[in-house]
Length: 274
Ligand SMILES: [Zn+2]
Image (cartoon, rainbow, N blue to C red; front, side, top):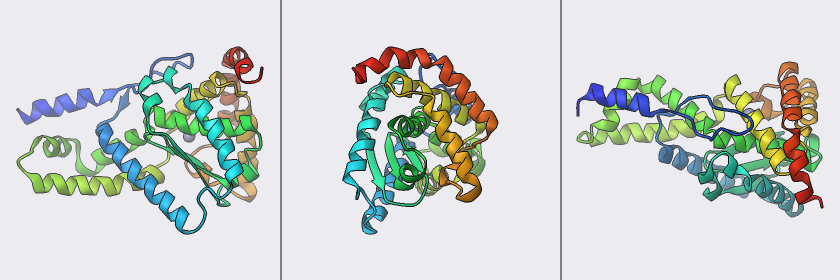
């Protein structure tokens, strides 16, 4: 096939939206050039390595009580992901707890969640607040923000035409392999190194709040939680703030949207607290 045609085909097919339109009305078209299976395999590899490192230093799932708590909260949220994308309900979800002073949590593509005990000790004190952080991180995975960031970075590195040629030219295997190897190494690094864009953060906030509300967790807890993060920032900057903004305008937006979505919480809370 003509390479120019392939180039346009890739461009068009890589502009998509990863989640369904729900009450939060997140509908932005996204640029996801990197194939989903590649993003998932990079994420899986990165997550297994993180778990193994934690295991070797006796930091993995040491606090069994808290591990069970965060798993219960996470699974309640995961039960509602079908509203945003039905396929995510069948993801191979994993939730683990790392003993560390870090005020942090993440959810890698495909549903690989890590919560750090520092987050629970110093910021997220109630179940609603824990749900606010985990829900926000799950929202990033549902929207495939990691894959989006990796796609942008790959294009910057290889050039879009180069990328088109490398995935279309199957006769040149060595080049293909080299690029793929480079890509994997790059991908996991980028997942942690590149901050989310402001727009991605707004989307994760909206979807996260809706996810909380649908799971019967008070979405207003996100407001108290991020306010605490903001206060901690002057004494002990939370690691999560290196990839997430926290400022008055974001906290204001959270409050406005939490109030907008409150009816979903009212509808659902009785299911969990009869
Ligand atoms: Zn975020």
